[in-house]
Image 1 (cartoon, rainbow, N blue to C red):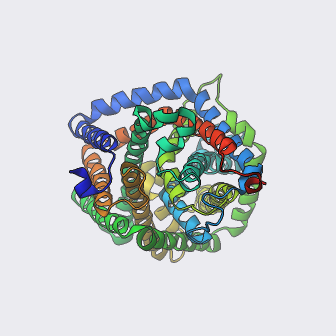
Image 2: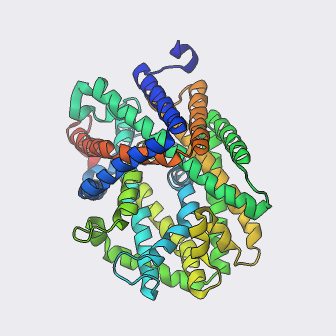
Image 3: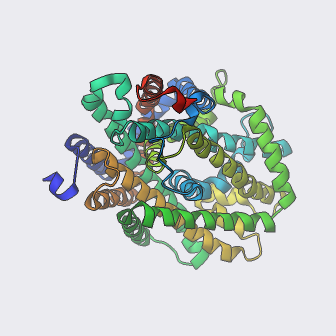
Length: 505
């Protein structure tokens, strides 16, 4: 029955994922407070007792990809030796950027550097001149190499398994060199389920986060007050948009929207750079990046063992859990679009390019926010404390023609949401369709609708925070998968009989 309507399907992964999602939504509607309390208690337990583990997983992942890129294995292609990349470098970067980070850039580009400036955890006193540099340094920690390495580790292993070894695009197959036939039994299906559930939870939260910004932007840009009814209407329109994009496929939908996303973001960045305090942005960029490099090891392993302030759990550990939880979706999607690239090219593209874009974006947008706060041009702290979604719109209000650029930001947020959601629907459909690189249209439509329904129900019930917490909690078991994937990948790439010395020289 499932195959007739949805194409090739793994029934176990499909039904467990589907039922788990429905149960989570029912609890979010019926008893959202009790569910949120239980999940928050669980999250607090994990943050308190497993900070060291999250730090070591991220550190191990960074060391692994550096070794891999510099080793003789870096020249191996993710595919046959004769394969060429399916997408141009620009289109490839546009898709991985839109899929993995775009919404967060707009939402947190203003807010996070200001938070760290006003409440600086180390190396400087809060609200001091030195705090501006430390604020950028911490933001680069959270959005740079340490985050993207989660995507890189998972993506390169799955792309190798799929395109080099000819396996279906599934996490279970990437673990086969380590756990053998167990990859096709209970353990393998459990890993695939965790990947699906973390993706659904993460994207539902992302849609909710986007609605916060869109809600404020609708009032700020168009002067319309968004009641709960209009929030739901907006979400339904978003569902329709990304369902259409998911149905049209990678080349006609996701790729084209991703290119639009990048150019809109570049326009906003250029506007603030030119109209703002350009010299300050450039000085902050150089100084902040220098501090980021010089304190890289310190920040990687800082666990605050004596004072145990809540800051680490609020920020760094939260981010590490969030990036790991998003690793299945973004890493799997990047793997899908990376056939024909070498391992070294993949790692540079997924780590170095996003880091460069992160440095530029947060130095300009975050720097403009800190500058506005320090000079008193705009009370950015008051605005963000009242409504986090107000950040970019309040910042633009300080510039000539800022109201017009705010319209661009508004639509850039919409297109980023669409590309993130349709990428997620495409990825989940691939996993449930036994790794089919082109899952059936009806399967993509089903999961696009389910993702949107999750966001609508959770927005109505107030349970969005609970599902966000679920995705963070999913990071703990999935961190074991990350370490296992590294071990399986190393074993496979070293011992694979198909690898001749000349292929990796």
